[in-house]
Amino acid sequence: EAQVTQNPRYLITVTGKKLTVTCSQNMNHEYMSWYRQDPGLGLRQIYYSMNVEVTDKGDVPEGYKVSRKEKRNFPLILESPSPNQTSLYFCASRGLSGANVLTFGAGSRLTVL
Amino acid sequence: ILNVEQSPQSLHVQEGDSTNFTCSFPSSNFYALHWYRWETAKSPEALFVMTLNGDEKKKGRISATLNTKEGYSYLYIKGSQPEDSATYLCAFHGNTPLVFGKGTRLSVIA
Image (cartoon, rainbow over the protein chains, first blue to last red):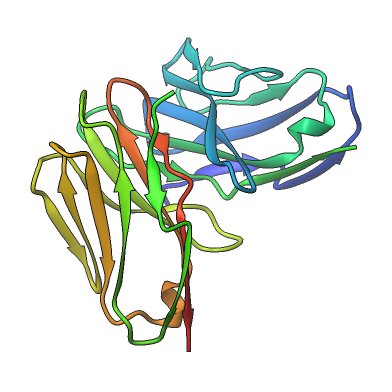
């Protein structure tokens, strides 16, 4: 089944404790992206990647890092999480060519205390 | 930051009513316009992607139109059903990555 898999789905952590949210897709998509969803603000892009070893900042990259060492994986790293990073996070991927739609992961709900 | 506006923000309709909502986007550097349906506790799922001015797409009771010259797209739902209750997102693809609107939250009352 074609899918985007994120882990963990739920996480409660404390300020300053580094964490990584993994994202993996099995569709051989070039493009991958991370979004956060906050009430009243819609989906905001954090980082995206057009292909292996190519990453770019989205609208709200502060406090986050990403890497794209393999085509299928695009982990989101919070080096020192803060409470304002409490949010619902979505990973998504799509092919580069034409007007391809995004396939989203199931979401990861992160709470930073 | 590009501005993608959706209206209304939310709406309630009775089962069986037809409804529509709007997505406004920049009319320059247009590449594609996406519509997604997002049910509570799930992840967004693609409905349509449209690339040409005048495009019309249909999927069951849901259809969408596109006007790239004036920068808007309409999403129509005919004979709304409770299972249509969701947030409907549009996303503009220009010369930057997809920019999402904040969505229209539809509630269909049985």
